[in-house]
Length: 194
Image (tube, rainbow, N blue to C red; front, side):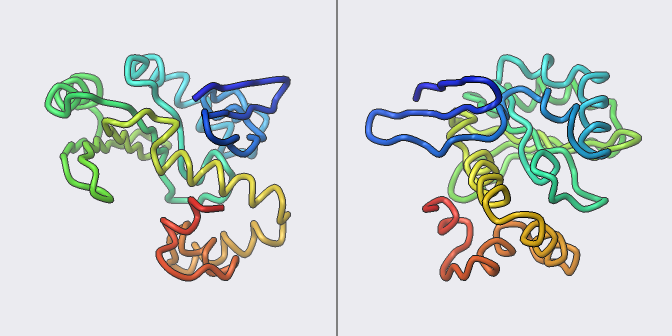
């Protein structure tokens, strides 16, 4: 997969298809500096804690709802990583983040893929570091975010508010998109087809 960028727009290209154009370069968090107040705070905390630099060898990408502005007050900062060895990843995450409040780490199977998840809290945010043996720009969390960001850009502010309202009423992000878009079937799978 090749990433092609110009200005603030980035697209990716594979041998067989062209991926959707991105409105932000999600691999770098500078876009957060010009975002809403919560995005600006997230940028400051991530930089202050040097988290992306500490995770550099795992090709980290901030994903989830905060980067695309549909988060709730209790939404956490999700950072996906590529890890080839879950045991070594667990040890490294514990060394890096084990001293933070409410730290826990576990390995599980998520969507039929072995995943190691480290969770911890700082004063302003909860973090979830998510490791899979898949390149980060090919992980579902990243793909969902890119697709959701494109849909939010196309559909406008009313659609964004409707998504946030559904989430405020307890619905998860992907099911909320599926409901408003009239998608049937597994929303996590159907969104990837858009």
